[in-house]
Length: 383
Image (cartoon, rainbow, N blue to C red; front, side):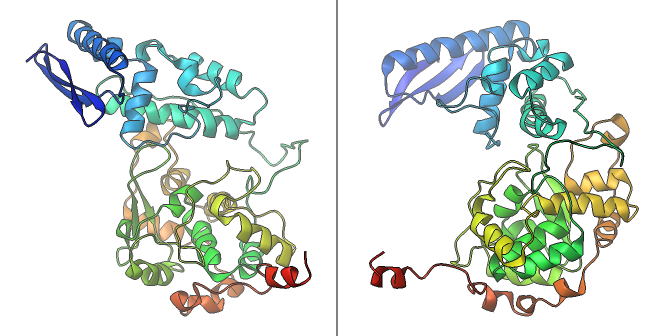
């Protein structure tokens, strides 16, 4: 049966077969004229794929749209109607994947983020681009390719003239312990997890209990920033905490009100803290420590593993860094070795003695002293 339009509810769908390829998909439109245009485009795409093959015809825009339909991370792609016109989705647009080379990606990064540091370009341009590319590879629309990423200056003699922002660099674990001790228990549990897992805040916010295997000391993330599932070893210090939280079911980490954290966090090094913003600001005020943010944990884990002598390949695998050379691409360290490596992160006495560790669920809803505002008193004063 040839392709044709039909309605399901108010929305037009495409159904049928073209060149022996069965198709059934929504146009996403209630307007017949728009649906007819999408039908014509679909027929043209299937015909082109049949004649030339998908690797010769697929565009970055098509790959990005498919990536998002597969529950990919839309941040930095710029796919919303009100998104800035200078983000990846609109920059590459209808350019065929086969025509995109390394210099095109490098040029895009320079154009989209002309004043950004290398790590910012890597996070906001290279990582989302590579996630879309890997999705295209899995669908047979592009070939496997090792993309080079920008590298930050290395060495202790490298000095930046700009002021470093909280969350863009590591801190020692004694300092981190003092900061976490000044937090309310619920956000303190989440920050503790970040400092002993190296996970991205957005990954920790969305972490589900069925992704955590406490006895095996292993976390399996289904959805990650790079678009690839990955495993994370569990440090022995946080294993008992995770055991209690996982037994509760649902999201692993909840706010003091028992609600899931927002899945929006600022970019690495930016102000704020997403769902942790109020808790971070309160802890800064109470502790006097101003240089810690959600991403600080990830930087501290990376640095702590290096100081402990963990091989860079193992460190990258723990942190979920995309391989940037063929050696790393073909290196997969066994789980037991990664667990041994993560356990090398230090545990200060202050951190190990925090009272909420004994019974996390009882302390879950409690707040740190001085948290919140007495608005009832303000109303009495007529303010």
